[in-house]
Amino acid sequence: MSKTVSDLLELVEMEEHVGSWWHDFITKRSEQRYPEAAVRLNDIQHLLGIWFRALGGDGGLEIAGADATLINSRRTLLQRMAGSNKKTELAWRDENALRLPPQIDYFEDAELNRDLYLWLGALAAMETNDNHQEPWFSHNQLLTRAALERYPGLRDKYLKLVEAHLLQRASGRWPTDEIAQEQAIRRALIEPGSVDQLPPARRMPLPVPLWLHPNPPEATRMPASEPPEDTSSSGGARELKEVPRKQTEKAQTQDEERGLITVRMENLFSWGEHVNVDRGTEDEEDDQRADEVARDLDKISVTRNGKAAKTKIKFDLDLPAEAEDDEIISDDLMLPEWDWKKRRLIPDHCRIIELMAKDALAIPLPERLNHTAAKLRSQFQALAPARVWHRARPDGEEVDLDAYLRYRTDRASGCDVAADNLYRQMNAGARDLACLLLADLSLSTDTWVNDESRVLDVIQDSLYLFAESLAATGDQFGIYGFSSRKRDPIRIHAIKTFEEGYNGHIRGRINALKPGYYTRLGAGIRYAAEQLKQQGAGRRLLLILTDGKPNDLDQYEGRYGIEDTRHAVQTVRNLGFHPFCVTIDEKGNDYLPHLFGNSGYVVIRDPMELPGQLPLLYARLTAQQH
Image 1: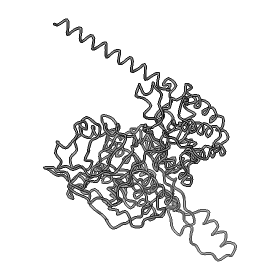
Image 2: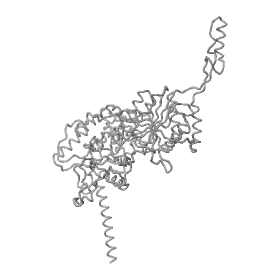
Image 3: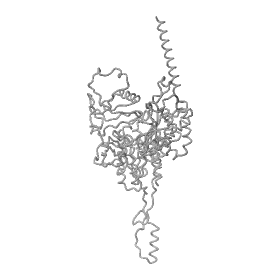
Image 4: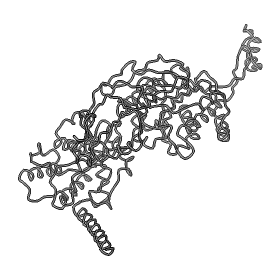
């Protein structure tokens, strides 16, 4: 008996081994891919961002990975046997990003795969709102011709890509309509603009990796009206892992009263699941499951469910209790916001609440920072203007000998001059400079940089050292923090106003800082500009410290927030101020050039270096302004 079971186990193991070998063999034979020559998007993402914008591409778009999408093209016998080539990765643009394949391994030559990335970036840079309405076939020819005419140096690369791709396009005993369609695509690739229309056929043509996606996924827009707020539900948004863009559809609300008997049994084993996103409780296991499901679905159905989640205990996680919150100084300031789609400024759109930590006790500088602070104070004292003599004054510490000799000479020559302005006075000079440091205090600052420090801890140390350094120069400076929960309220934390001197109470306020909510950066910048307007200094610097992109719970996530922030930065520049951004976001190079210009920001790769680097950066910026 035991021998029979052993034989059966060996037979099953052999069958699994043969099946696995056959699957690998047939899949490899059916796929026209070359993984050994693959070029990955992550490796050249920064280069592509520079390339795309240098060719005139929309600076507000980030470079992101594109998800594989279903195609309905003819497949070979081997591909049907292997079940492969049902999906492919193509490039496309949407309002937030230029989406490119996460990996390109179409060609045996890695240089060709890299050139394909560059070509797709150039093709997307030619796209405008005017030509986007063209049909896919003529649209891509139009973009190709525009790219080759504007940048003739790309022609050789393009022709090599076309030659390599045409060798890979399958051909065989196809129906007449499919053959005509394929011939039209080949002519359009070789001579862009030579074919007006794509002949109709029962099947979709083979994908063209040198062109943009014929039918890119687009999210279905939900109704513009916001659902009524429910203070009993959680307002904290979970930070989602990056999930590729999916096709979506609006669906009817799932009938919760329906019993299990009405559910078809085969659906129990499918990936289609109903997830209540607006639930009042968070289950980490369910959240992880939802992320996994979202990655595998080709289409996501979205519905609006107005019912509150059924929970036994309800918490208000939106705002802290009044007794635990900072003291409100003012709540009547309204600021505008830029609507980039309507191309207009919406007046009185954001409500500002100014807060200050109450009962923040005066504290000494943390001992761990004493050595660095002493070194910075010594360096910054050299920036302080030297004391100078002010001559020919009506009173002062000493007699001004030059003025006195002129007076005696004039009197000896018979001139009747008054005996005034004969003294000199030693006074300190002034740099005529005001700086406002605006610190991002959003929820993301609660994340950990390492085993010992959070982002907020790094920001606090940076503020300590920044204040110590500027106090040594005598420069005017203010420190403010901000976070938001939609457009009402924008929470502004006054850490040090321009009228206050730096002391232990300011350090106490820095020590009392807590992670806030979201990052409505445009509103924060506009508030900072209002404060700088009130300063009489000839030169005014706005230093912005952040750890990520502009975002909020509403439409501010994505392109809307990027464009509003850019408009706010331009407004600051028009006032004659100097905005500069310091970020620890590794992806900052993807979007900050569009917001602040190529020389208006810096990315600190190691967050732990920020406290020591921030004061030195200020010294360089103010030296440049001289």
